[in-house]
Image 1 (tube, rainbow, N blue to C red):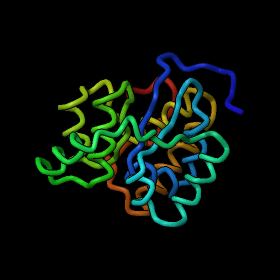
Image 2: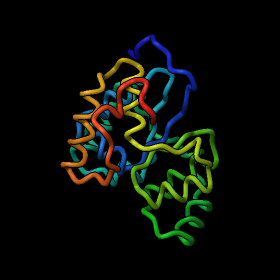
Image 3: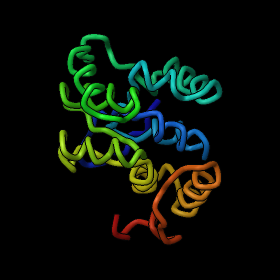
Image 4: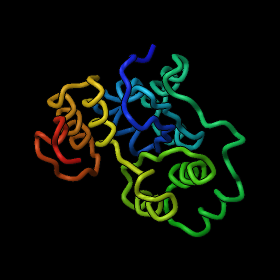
Amino acid sequence: MKPTHRRVGAVRLLIDACAAINLFNCGKLAVVCELPDTEVALSPIVVSECGLDCAAEIISLQAAGLIHFVPDDEISPDRFLELVTDHDIGDGELESISVCEATDRAFCTDDAAARRLANNLLGDARVMGSLRLLKFSVEASLLVCTDAFAGYRKMRECGGFLPDVPSDFFCIGEAA
């Protein structure tokens, strides 16, 4: 069951493979799925891009009702193919962007090229990275800032391409 505390600005969130893998690698994917007033979803291609261990956790979180899979009616094959033709970005990112274009979903990606495209198509307010989700987790009292920073360091150790942030970045009151 999700916690009862609430974060302002409830959101339907679509996470791509890059962000899902980073969050899985640091052991915080399940924590992010507990964010209050947040529905976490993944598209079909994204799940297939996550690798066996990460996909197994995603499926387990979906079975527990903490992650949703994007319904088929939210996926526009025509728009997806148009994006694939026009952009040299991974299929999971492009499928996610096409879903977010057609819905009110926000998009979480740690892929720089996907983030640039999503910012152009969706607007900056609907695009974020996994670090912001860790910050939201601290704000919702699901993590303390030192645990969020340890997760960030683990993501980088596992190969995540993330910006340099100070150790107090995740602490409440710090600039995002």
